[in-house]
Image (cartoon, rainbow, N blue to C red; front, side, top):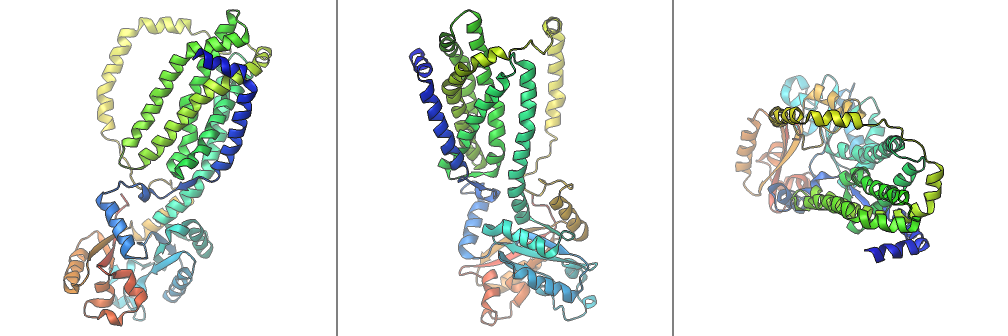
Length: 473
C-alpha cells in the first residue's frame, strides 16, 4: 500500500482534477435519479399481496380507491355538483358518493341511516376518490385547490403525494440543522479552527458522489433518498478524523509533511478499513431482506461507505497536504476539559457499573417487547400537519376507513350476492361497491354501461371493493 500512497501524494493535482470532474458529473446525475414514494412497489415478490396486486392490474385499468375527500356545509344537490367537479379533475379516475349507493332523489330520511351516514352526515359530504398513481402530486394539488384549505382530504394517495414533497423539503432542513451541530462539536474537539471545515468538506464530497452514483440504480426509495446522506455523514466521519489525528502525530515526531502523510496512511489503513468494511458488510446484509426497501437501502449505503473510504484514502490526504499551513496558523488550545480525573473515577466503579448494566438488561428486554410498530402510512404525519389535521377531522366525523379489494371468479352472480350479504353482516364492513350491490344480480350485464361495468367486471374476475372501519395497518 505504501507505493499506492506515495503515488497519491506525488500526483496531488491529478487527484484534485479527477475529483472535481467526478463532483460535476455527480451533481448532474443526482438530478436524474428517480425517487419512488410508493411503498407497495417494494413488497416482496411472490407474496399473496404482490401476486394479487399484479393480477388486479392485469385485469382492471382502474386502481382501487385511495383517497377520501370531505367537503362541509353542502346540501345534497351541492354535494352532487361537487362530485361532478371532482370527477373532471385530471388524474381522478373515479369518485364514489351517496348516489352510487342509493337513489338520492328520494328523501334521505326514508333511506337506510347507516348507508347515508357513510357518505353524508351533518351536511358533510365524504367522497371516496380513486387517483391515478402516476399523477398523484398534481391531482392532490388540484383537489386541494377545488375544495380549499378549510375542507379535508386523506388516504394513501394523499399521504404519498405529501410525503414526496415534504421529504425533499425536510431533508434540506435537516442538513441545515445537522451541519452547524457537527461544526460546533468539531470546533470543540479539534485543535484548529480550519479542521472542522476540511473534515465536513471531504465527507460532503463523498455524499455528493454517492448521490450522483445512485443513478446506476435508476430509481431509489424515498427512505434511502431521505436518510442516505445523513447516515453516510454519521457513520463515515470518523475515518477522516482517524487519518487527521495520525497525520498530526507523525508531524509532531518531526517528520516532513509528505512523509508524515504516507506514514499516517500506512498506519491508519488497518483501523479505518476494519471500521469501514464492517459498516459496508452491515449495510450489505440488508440486501438479504425480502422486503425490497432493505436491498434498496443496503446497496446504496454500502456504496456510500465505499465511496467515503475512497475519499478518505485518496482525496483527503491531498487536501491535508495543501492545507496543513493553514491548519498550523489557525491552531488553538483544547476547548474541552481534561478527562483524566473522570477516567480514574470510572475505573474505580468498574464492577458496580457492570452490575447496574446487567440489571438493566431484564427490564429493557421486557420493555422492548411492548413497543408498537406502525407498518403503513397512516401514522407518518402528526396532527400538527395539515394532512394529519385533515385525517383527524374526517375520522372524527365519519370514522376510520380502509379500502380492500376482493376478486372472485366471474360468472356466478347468485354466489356473489350471497358472499356480499355475508360480508355486509361483518360489523367492520361499512360499504361494498360491486356489481351485485350496485347493479343487482338480476340485471343482465348487457344493460349496464361499459364504464361502470369495466370498474367491477373483467374478463375473468368480478371485483368487490370493501370499505372497512379500520386503520391501514
